Image (cartoon, rainbow, N blue to C red; front, side, top):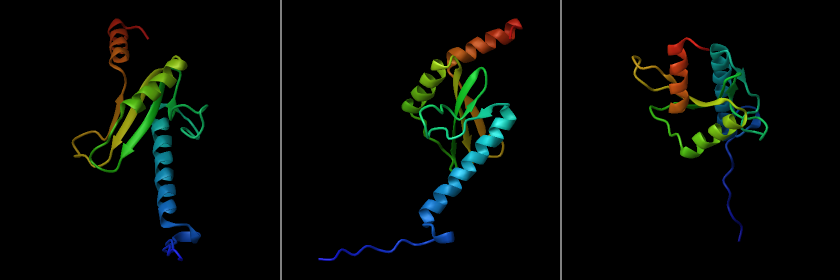
Length: 133
């Protein structure tokens, strides 16, 4: 018996539409991370997530951030994701964080947020109150 396999639809330059969309999403995500890096004065980690040595998406002397975005009005953040960035940042003696971008949100609400652990926020707040860097 011969099994029928539907032909894959092709997009631009012979690539499948699915892989073309994935590349477009990845390119958009890379561009968003580059923009965030510029605005936060942080280094963008090339090939983040692709290799074990490339931890986090954005970094500076104090912080190591992962970046997550959603084109819809909600986003899921798992404990596993928070544990990963926390473990990686602690290994480098940096404060872990997560930059969250939600695109479909009322215009009166900021689209970009930064999450850091409560203990680190309290320490930063105390340093600011005491006037110490």
